[in-house]
Image (tube, rainbow, N blue to C red):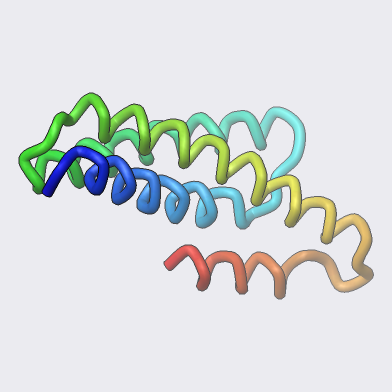
Length: 102
C-alpha cells in the first residue's frame, strides 16, 4: 500500500475515534480533556494502522492525531448544542453518532 492510502486510512480511523469520544457532548474543561484523550488514541490507532501496512508510523500518528482531535471537538460541539436546544437532551443524537463512529 502506498503512503497516501495509509494516511487516508489513519485519518478515517482517527475520525471514528474522535466521533465516538465526542459523542458524550461534554463542554468546558471536560471537552478539552476528552479531545486530548481522543487525539492520543487517534495517534496510537494511526501508528498501528500504518505499521500494519509497513508504512511510516510518523505519518500515521500525525494523521490520526489531527483527525481524532478535530473530530472529537466538532462532534462534541454539535452534540452539546443539540442538548441545549432539545427538551429531551442529546441522548438519541449521541447514540446515533456513536453508532456512526463504529
